[in-house]
Length: 211
Ligand code: SF4
Image (cartoon, rainbow, N blue to C red; front, side, top):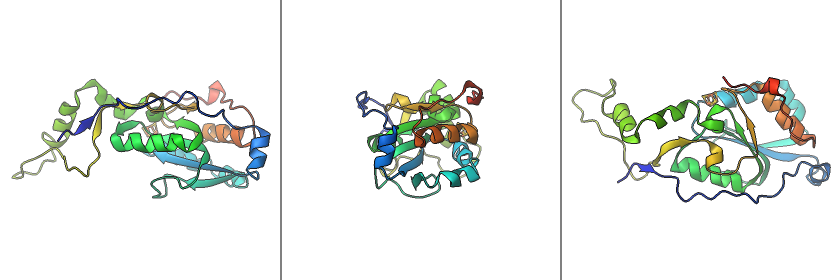
């Protein structure tokens, strides 16, 4: 069985509904909107930046309902969200399915951090054939136990990894990007506060990080 997959059947959605950040829309939501976050292939550093919003997050709780976060084990969001944050890039079929479902059920999708924005550290493997990466990880690894014949995992229940690591916008349309590894909590708060306040998203250059 093949252990990898190509991204070949993914369709961009260029005709998604216009971003509903106007005051009338927010009022129609009784002043409170659903917000969720998912994590694909990253290190959770960006998730921790969310926590760096500290008590400011509490101040937003009268305007948002956090439906799902990376701290929970909910596989799929149970209700439509206005805002969806994504940490991490796409490196498996499961990631593709998760991101496509999130796109279909969020009005505004935001790439958070270098991995989501351009692939980040995991995309370093794009320089090599996938077969070489798998062999290095599972066959030649110094942690291979002596006396046991090493194999590359290939159980049918395992998700297939993609040949490359992809930034999210190469799989689905993303509406906003917050760069950084990780971005500051200040930057995430600025974007979220703009949206829930009905303002156009305006992340100052000074809050963009490219490290
Ligand atoms: Fe971790 Fe950096 Fe990727 Fe965020 S961008 S998930 S901090 S490696």
